[in-house]
Image (tube, rainbow, N blue to C red; front, side):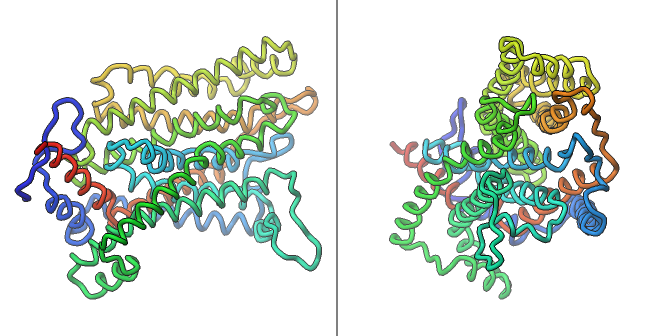
Length: 457
């Protein structure tokens, strides 16, 4: 243990007591380099790998048979696939918010959770980018929506939301990868210097791009990191706003609403922070990271969850008020159908998960109760997915003409693709926490150094 110990605050500690500069490196690096693989991780790994293989096989069957294996029909031409797109891209928003915006705001509590939240963003955005391609019907021609040089004169339709999604999700994934990898460089060098096997030293050394920790390396790294944070910050608003425009440009009742962009952004942060808690709580328990991911971090994340949940609840109330205040008979009929129609159980269960359940977070004891937070995060993730399904399905099933109304009933393949994407996401995350540090070593050491300096002052 280092001789210099950070001060311990009873109010808001940013790191658990008893940790020094060197011990932080030992603890986090050893999770990757020396910690033996244990049976809970192996069981989860092979279980999620099986789900991933099922997902791959189902994708192959979809390419062979077409999207008719799903429950999509006329008038509900969008089903689970498009709902999954919106849900997955929303989950990725918390990683960008934690990494970029909280970095610019100099919030120290982000340090313990930003690395795995960034990884969560990459995996969620990958799942989000996959479903629009599968929904195309002829996904092998997905490159038609990109402005590639084509001598046949086939160019994308710029008024199509598919093109907007291509640029929005593509930009989001690219910037997220750059931001994540840039922050990872000092940690890769630390793993290179501590690794014992030749293969590990070469692999981490190659990935570290020659990082030696010189002053000019750190100066350029910090400049580039802040610049990328400034570039990534608008993505929190722009990406999900673009996704929301897929709906709001349509004249279908329930879609045509100017509140959709801010409403979708708030919902994205709501579901994203719920997923951060879903991952953080088992992670800190399985790898004994309670001194790094402290109750203070969970408390702050829960406060953000409470605030974004209030914005989501305001969006629900605004939709209802606007429908009746406008006097539009079609919007009113759609709203009443949500209350009492075929999809009413989905609507009321969604309201219970997204509006009623988060109210317990007004109490401090609830924000620090890990079991309660974990259960609440699962309920919110389920509620937000149901909200996306309700927006996509119920609006198109209940449009202007009674003769064109219909119902969407998911098939077994719809559920297989949903559960398969969840398995793939979990499998990628399990691989990540065993191959790369789930907590930033360099930023955590800097936090310890600042705490020690403040203690001496």
